Image 1 (spheres, rainbow, N blue to C red):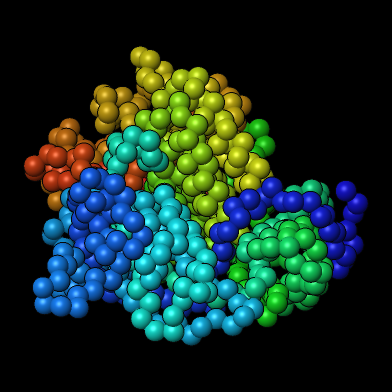
Image 2: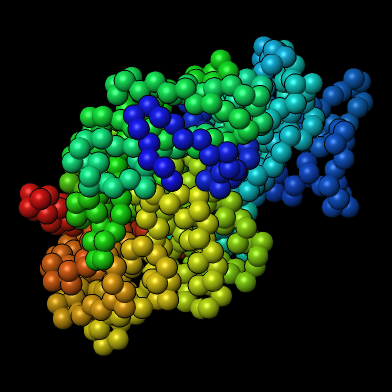
Length: 614
Ligand code: GCB
């Protein structure tokens, strides 16, 4: 590679392995879009009557009994057995479970329907329908025609709407959503969280030019000598742009006004790599979460983003942020607002959750166990909170199946493409507590390889398990050889033993890599008081945290951080104790009404001390 000079751009007309998913549109917030959020009508359809006929054959497209078709009656005697009524509505975005009692435990098909008007797109325009996420299996129909389907409950997807299908008025949009669990899906049938169903994130119609920017990436050039660049305050930025199709030669304008960058990037083909030099760039960090306005202009469309630039790497046993050792004062989070027993989705929700995180003096979150909504990662960018983002390859996935592996890769790609420009995201996690076996390791290895191809600028990890051999904990899961940091979940004093056992625990790691405790925790029912040995009391959990903190302080020098389990109590159908749980996993440091438990303050004190030592 030849060196770049200021304002000199390198073009490599290679197809970009970095931006593989052909059709995923990035940064919807900044595009010309119309929101379809709001009130949708629904039909609950546990037998999938709207999809299969009485012989259990998929209905034909124009079958009047198919629920994607508008029911029509011309005569009094016409038989119609379904319709969308005004009295049956669900809010989008939102899970269905929290919106009506009938949905609380529901797992199956719900049909969502709404109408919309839309100004006909011009000849040189295209229209896409974009979903932030639908859990789990979505089939989308417009005006009686199927426009696509998608599996995976936590990642975005979109379909182009053929122009011939769009009407100026009264477009009849139907989405069949099915959240039934299946052994061949990701996650599989067994998890420790609530299977919230529905159109859980934003829905938008997006208008783009005929040829448009589908995806882009912009980051510090990985090949430059980082320390030298830092010293000189002259960094190369590099990136890539993916257009939706081959474009006749023209150019993309890239501006970063604050850095006085105004690049004209020649396009030829559908993907372009570029690189240029900057002066006086401030690096992004938790102490200084500096974001720059970045504007891409192409073919009449302007896409604006706020991007931070930072380097994350490991060196031997350390995690380095911008070349300096960093300790991750983390906390794990589920995407839930416990007070309302629902999925979080909005900016306000993100503000609430990050409010708790900041109160803890944490500098990192583990977004467990699936990609959270983009308000979370955007807010993390602006607050300077580091992020671990994970796909739901959880527990007992079918590791033998090629098909399942492909599904995992799709979710991985969708997660990475959406958030690849978020400085806060430093770790992609390919899974949680997967049982050790050669076939599992191959499966996970291939996810790791895929993640590295998609994004070589971040760390890859997976939460591993560790056994207790008479007080000696040996972390030697073979997967540890392939991840950048070795992460483990441990519950010494909750699942086995008592919290005091941590006093004599010994920790050994088979790999010369940073060690991260991706989970540790104990349950407590807020307000329940007992002596410290009384299970479920706040005192027990407090004791647990005190012992853990002392144990952490004695960890070998590869100890690089922790993200205890978990910020708040969360819903789980596995948690059935009638007094202490009632359908809640009680390991939260904060209860389902927002009250901090005693243990919250133990962790907060530890983090305050660590922060002040920096
Ligand atoms: C774990 C899992 C997490 C559970 C937690 C628990 O190890 O990774 O998903 O919720 O333990 O509470 O048992």
